[in-house]
Image (cartoon, rainbow, N blue to C red; front, side):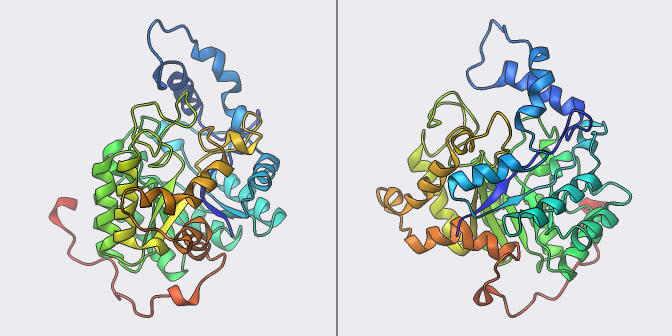
Length: 372
């Protein structure tokens, strides 16, 4: 069973865009001037990219996603709802409620193939109501939070979301990648703030997406959270420790970020430490891509490395790690490639993984003085 733990489906259309226009412009500026290898003179015009930027990777009918999953032999994929409106200070064409509805329809249309999360910006006045409807009406699973939008994971405004998640056995996913500007407020995303929240909600199932990619200091904080709580999972999703961020080379040997292809000894050491902290039963993989017209083949996925190649890379982990004295088994890899995500998302729960006891508390008082 192959379950990708990190996929996106952008469902924008010319009439209703998924992203705020400022988000689209930001990506075009990044492509034109900031991508690895971009050096003066700057001859690319981001205006020429803007009209087609979003539609290159939009899949409003989900046909590209299912087709590329079939090509790659991926049985199911975790898909995140992202609410970008607050971080860019601009309303997108699609409301978050519409995104939830569309993903719910995709799940019904392709049963067992897509495991979609909710994702309302928690600073919305009706964020809890949106979350509840996503779970109860649209049958989504859990919630994806992006603190770099401008809030800390321990902010009391999130407590109702955590309470509902606990009471309804819903996992809470956090983005923990170091912001490259697309989410703007990097300081909010530092994983240590998630550790603060977990002291108040230790029974909450938490998944740390990206594992701090690509920043070793943040990776260490993710390990600390996982090592101290059996309910915390680590997920290397797409632009992470295996692939880094996109570059012109394939495999991605170039670029400023450490990857398994330009610094294999380091990445093997990091993954071994992740296993020591969480166990292979709490590590998930993911490709982090979004299929669309410009990414219509499975080899276009995973930063152009290919969905199938990424699965193959994980399958080869035991032999690769052994070169550096680390031990991984085929069984470890099977869990990472599918069983762990299936368990977290309620797709296929494993009774042996159920923790028989609870910490038994939530939202301790009084809060630390640093929180006001």
